[in-house]
Length: 262
Image (cartoon, rainbow, N blue to C red; front, side, top):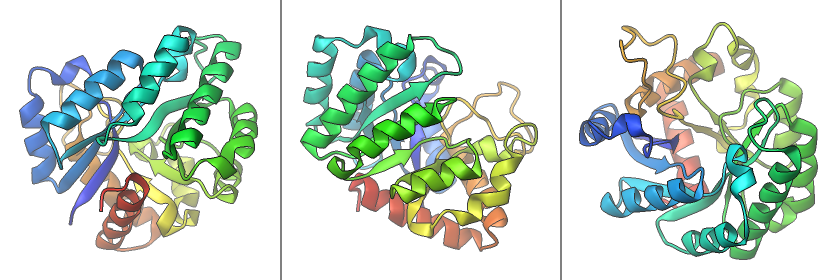
């Protein structure tokens, strides 16, 4: 069983002291490839460097998360375009809208998101997307740009069944994380994860965030890492009513096609 973690924040400082061990544990748990998330100009640069240092194992995205949208200017836009041309960078993003924390004004978020939609459209790159508490504005922009972008994945999906089907109607891919393992806030996902078509479902850890609450034993440091993708896959398979080998194989083939990894 070989898995692909489509969203791992491996540039996070918590990985600096044991990075090689993190990669080794991931491989030992069946994670054959990982996509390192770029969520700011600096983070995207670092993600590219990691991908270059570990060819065939790590790949990267390049984008500006809505939390950093206020920093998005012409220089950032130009640099993201350059980064998106690099062969290790397989998607534009993490881009989108986040009205939950409002760390950047809505106007800045909308402007930064649309500029990244334009980059993906012009370069023919997939989009790695973030949405929280902003479904209507997010969906409106996706509808406006969907025909011009080859593929989109709504990363770390945590929303409602209705939102899920809005995205599936636009032929979007869906990324499921360990959020589904959280009985306090993710149990609703268990009710309809089986409604995601096999060729639209991908899996991810969003490391170091969202450590699955059903992992036993729980690590004392509470840091999530790609090795736990196998656990997430097992949980999703159970909720979909299929063998874990089926969920693993289908999500891997889907990720290979989406990111051009085959």
